[in-house]
Image (tube, rainbow, N blue to C red; front, side, top):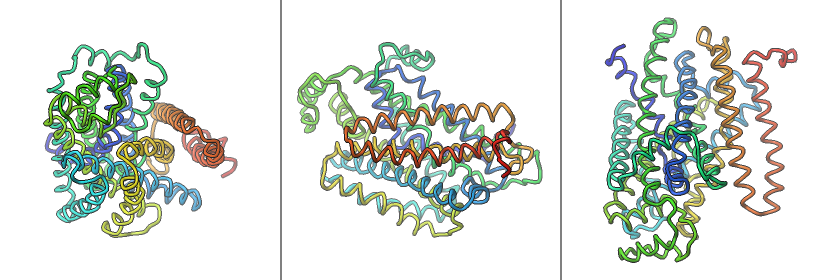
Length: 478
């Protein structure tokens, strides 16, 4: 083992880990703390470990083949399923981009004490992306260092909130290592499902498999390939451990301070602290519901203005760091699936325009609750896209014709298949639960029709995956 070699391979894992710290994840964390206290920390730990194992497969694919996941899909799948797959992944990237726009706009609004309206924050996020493109010209290592700086900001800001609130350490350890949820009902179950959906991101598989190609590896030398796989996995472990600690900070802050609180409790405290936001919380005995905007407000009411501003800086860092990884993912996916080489400038202009337009309309014509409410819809959208990243990555890492001596063994085939089945089932529950909450017959019928098409395509990918896993009797002569 060499720390010097580890340093040479450090970078891709930290860029990948940013998806575990985007505004959608932060919102899931704070809602988990407010709804279930410390009881769902073990779900967060389990989801992060599962995410790490799946990222390992994506990184190995890139290292061994010299191709990223989108390029392998382009070579292995037929034209029609390939185009459908590309559209699904693009949808996930745009959904993620919208979450980043929402998070950044809310952070800018909080930092300016409301002087910059939400729509103004949305417009500012268009400009900041081009600043990252300017940084990108100085090389990937410089950009990796900048993202390291943003992750440090998140660690410091959310760490400050953790130290200020002083969560109960005994409850923290119990929640982390005892897989049990006492007195939990439907809201806690929904939140547990939401944690898994927020942590495991579909476009991250495509991103990680491409980023590892930035390091020179002699693919004709098995020892060198094996060494690269080892160091990339160690780096991913470190990066996801850091992201996990930051997520723990957020969950435990809201678990300690706001679990079992009612709207009336918060309304009273905000009124006593002369907060201009006390009207956000009606004076009733309903359980407090928080999002990334209200989260900052209640921290400000209970722990002073500094807590609010530091929270907003952390959310801004989360949104900004996720922005560029979404841009990279989009470019890799487009180049891989379509062999279409656009400049990053054109690519950013397209995806950010698509992401900003609906967000801007909601910001102008609706209030902050509708804007943060979009996050729930976007989490559902990305949950639907998960099979289109997880099934291909398991399929191709199990094929000896693609991975040669580094193809998955029996353990990884079985474990990977079971993990993906578990994640997809959990996310389908999340989607069905969301559709049921809409209470609209027309939407039910539309969802039923789309479900048939969606499940047919997932079944097709699963059929090909099972053949790759060794069920050759399903090949039907193909």
